[in-house]
Structure formats: structure tokens, C-alpha cells
Image 1 (cartoon, rainbow, N blue to C red):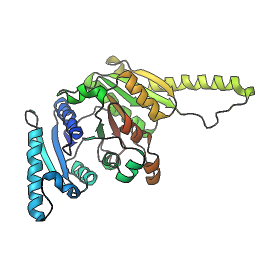
Image 2: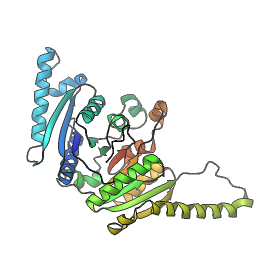
Image 3: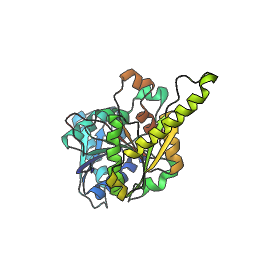
Image 4: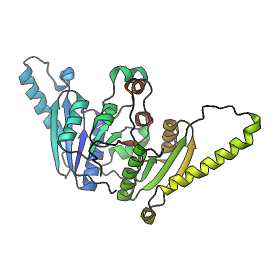
Length: 307
């Protein structure tokens, strides 16, 4: 599957962090010859951001919209691509998801601040809500000190792409996206599978040798399975690196990405119960909050809109 993009939505709340996402939006729009929609959602609970109180509501709303439109135009000044401003009012996550559906978006880009624990539970996360409601993949961008040169550059290229592989259907879909992007950017491709710690840590001494043999055999099987994921024709343009790690998937993937200087992590999004998501979060959510680079999350969509 060769990934195609015709319409890209890039969100900003006019913060410095959110404005970094525009570099990703512009670069991807150039790479794929796509149209960029630069989106801002007016949150009326934060009306003072626009310079006035909320009396004379309709007049103030018009003023806020004009102010937002002008800021979007300034942000895109000097960028020679096809683009359109989108200004909406309401809940940020709901409005972005609605606009992505309306514009038939192939990708949505947003910033993430990495909240965790009680703060995340109380405030919620626009990024994580979008990850589960968008009709397209979501690219979450961090502002990480180690990668400021990437974030502030005008021409962003993914040179090293990591795909987290657990051999599930969602992981296989993420693999297709990651492989396509690696081909597009002629990037170094890293396929990583993490073996989680076993439930039973203590093995009887009588079976210690058997445990070692089983463990070694499992590693060999998983290594072969990772390598078999890559289509034969892809080997003509890339030499994928397959890696097996042991531990908690989110922690190991983040450590690996940091050590290898990865530019993009691609992960699938599985279903998740609401309360479990609040208190625990999926591997993809945890990686998205703490990764040292951009994270692309992909989930199966009804109607089969992929590629």
C-alpha cells in the first residue's frame, strides 16, 4: 500500500508549541503535493485570549474569528503551498474531528504536551481524544529540546522511522503506513517488537534449562516473523533493522527511539475501555505523551478509508 495524501489538517491554538506543527504540515504538504488546512478552534471558555471580554457575544465572536483568521494568515506568510484557513468555535477535539471528516482529511497534525497522571485525568487530552475519533491517522508533534533543530526547520524529512510491531491487525496497518513513508522519504526503517515481562517471574530450578531453550526459540521465531513482514520488493530500496526488546513496550520503544535518533514512531491504536484509558492508557497513548519525536497513530476505520 502506497500512502497518498491529498488533504492535511494542521491544528494550532497559537501557542509556541502548537505553531511548531505548522513546519510538519507545510513539509508534508510539499512532499505529497497536498492541500493544507490550517485549523484553529475558538474555545469560548478562554475568550480573553482574543483580547476582549465576552459581553456583546455575537460582536465579540466575529472579532475573535477575524483575529484568528489574521493570525493564521501571518503564520502561513511565505509558504508557497495550497492552503486554506479553518476557524471554528466549540470543543477543540470535536471540531477538529468534524472538520477532518468534512474535508476528507488523509492526516491530522497536532501538538501534544505530554500530560500524565492526575493532571491528564482532570484536564483530559485533546490529542488522545483525537487519536480515537478522527477519520484519519494522527501525527502528534512534541517540542523536545534534543530535536529543536528538526522542529524549527522549514524542510522536515523523516530519516529514521520506527514501527512498533506486535503482529496485531492494528499493528499491521501501522506497518503499511510506516513502510510507505519510509519509501517516500528513503528513510532507515526500524521494526521493533517488545516482549513483555512474564506473569510468573520465578521458575522452578528443575525447568531452568527448559526456560532458556524456550526463550531462545521464541526470540528466533519472532525475529523471523519481523523480517517476514517486509515485502520482497521493499528490499530493493531499504534494509530494515529488526530488533527484539524485553520490558514494558512504551518504555522500551521510547528508550530505543531516543538512543537511535528516530524521527518518527508509527504505532497502531487498539480499542480501549474508557476508565482503563483514564488511569492506564494504551501503549500508543503512553508513547505519544513521552516520545522524543513525532508519533503517527493509525487505527482501523469503518468504511476502510486507508491509503
